[in-house]
Each structure stands twice: as C-alpha cells, then as structure tokens.
Length: 91
Image 1 (cartoon, rainbow, N blue to C red):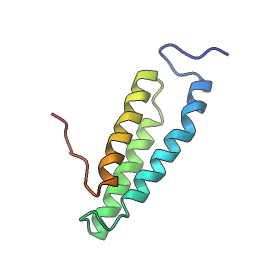
Image 2 (spheres, rainbow, N blue to C red):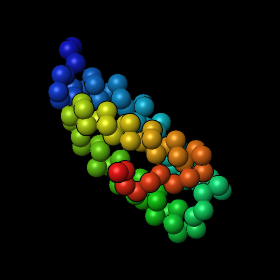
Image 3 (cartoon, rainbow, N blue to C red):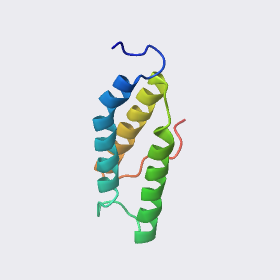
Image 4 (cartoon, one colour):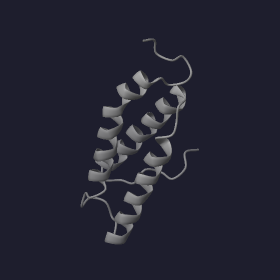
C-alpha cells in the first residue's frame, strides 16, 4: 500500500497511533507532577482540556495537520517536564 501525500491513509494513521497514545499518556502523567503549581480542581480541568484536544485531533485526516498536532503536543510536554505550564498563546 502507498502512503497518502496529503490525506492520511489507514496505514499512516496506524503508524502514528503508538506515538500519539504515548504523548497523551505522558502529558496526563506530567499534569500530576507536584512541581506544577495547580490545585486539584485545576489539574482536573487541565486533564479535561488535554482529553478534549486529543479527541478533536483524532478526527484529523490531513498529514500536515497531524504532524503539527504532534509537534504541539511534544512542545507542551517539554514545558510540563520542566515543571512549567506551556504558554497559552504563541506570538
């Protein structure tokens, strides 16, 4: 089977599945870090935001958009690992 050039094929989606699940789990785990200055309610709210973002992203079929979403998740994870919250908006 040939991989898609613009739109993701089933093969492309299967290739990214493990990476996306790993990022999802790492982000949720990082939100439990005691380094983050969050209350219990704020942690639950952040986890709900992460779930919503990954849920909306799961419908994406454009290869470029999928790559951008993965890059954004890795960028956010880099902040969380340092004990910081990622910036809300990038200027």
